[in-house]
Image (tube, rainbow, N blue to C red; front, side):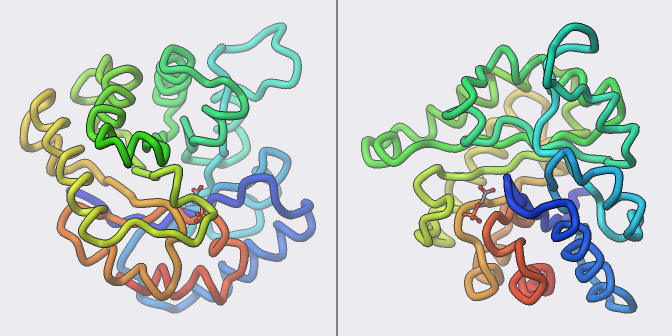
Length: 251
Ligand code: PGA
């Protein structure tokens, strides 16, 4: 069954104490509320264990924002999928456009990261999306197709069934410029068709495809009302509970 998911991506924001406060505040805000989607928070690696211990992780899934493409060993500064799991986190955001652009992540490293995340029982939230020039020259369909084919179409159908996709047009991230509901639906439907062509209609139908890029309390309802938009990956608006809750409540 396809799940609706609202996932926060805190990026490199909050100190440990600030992050703990934010997570606890969200936990308190969700208590006793009937919520119609899964809620996830992607937090800095330094915060994972403390936050997972401080909140009800049956209500709020904790996500790392990255993990290594290697199992273990002499990779100074890296954090493995097994380490992420050991903190109590259940998800990992992979292939975010900021990691592709600033940290040189390639289809090949992302393929490894995805396999290791799955092997360790983490749910990857796998990000794809085009830059502005690609959108303006009409290449966005080809770009997202190549990103999916390059990093996750090596998975078995069973493995693919465990990942979440997040379409995030780079031109909409942190810019206040959201894709219109029609633009989001058009490309989400295309992504689902691409998945269906590879894995069949059932796998495609069960796949959650999130939208990300300046999603907020004012536009979430319209975006999520689309049949192929199954939630959001939220950056800026996930950093304050009064901004994040209306997005969760858009379902
Ligand atoms: P934004 O970020 O909501 O601040 O645009 C989304 C993301 O990068 O995941």
